[in-house]
Image (cartoon, rainbow, N blue to C red; front, side):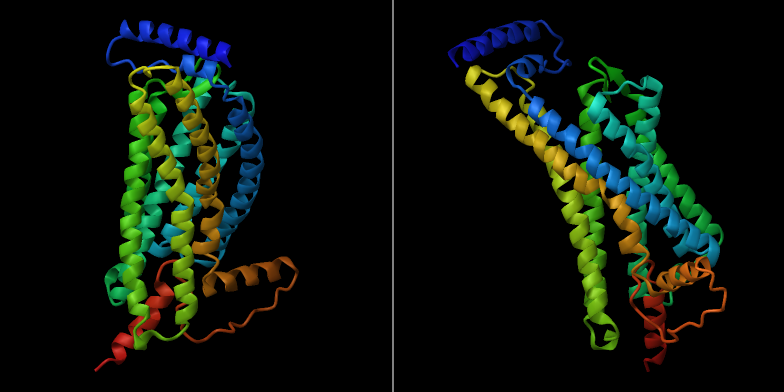
Length: 370
């Protein structure tokens, strides 16, 4: 133990000497911590857990999102704003999903695919990440309008505005992803990462701000929808709808909340290390913090990245309409070509995918008012 502490002190002196000669814009060199702090266990933990979980997520996401696209193309009007949102969400989730096998490979073997592939995968990943996020925001806002003002033209918008919404969504995703792809390179030890600390912090805080914005919109819109549902005039299927809203909120915050907290703490740790630690005790303490953050990052990221396989379940197949389409398609695949009569002639508020079915009920309620 004494030998290790002495080695730590020597490395500390070397690091202090070397950093004193660096430009102030250069960040602190962490290599001395890597030499003293054995992070092999955390790296092995990520290399073992990540490929297994990502494999399951990829399979489920491909199945669910491709099924959504097939059903939309076969049975729905793609000019509808509602269906435009759903289609784009499925496509953005597929973009996101397509990159997960590369990250799993990266954790196992390092990045051996070259710098162009590093940039392309990073770009596609963040396009899917941000376009999916903005879609969830827009779908939530659309639901809010459908519930609070069911007679609004926005609820039944089609054609040009659907195309415009798609353009805005993907333009936002591309613009948000460009910095990450430009400043990502293959560094030493086969690492596909940002070239400097500035862009690393920029990426972290960009994700944090986006999460906070999404959270505010989700909380406001869903709280207003729940208040409307609790009124005596909206009793039909109320309990099931409230449970669905609660589930959506829990899944969102349990998935993205811990991940954003961890990456924010990582950024704070980075700032705290802009100067060399005072003594060897700080080196040991930093080692422990770094390991805990590594474990927390690997675990929270798995929950967050699983959203791409959960979106089809919570945002599409909970609706009666899509359940009927799925049943119809499965029967046609099974060789039963007889026409299927709809078993649900009544209006329903089960689906929160777009607010359309709920808005139909609310529209009838509004018309019936004196």
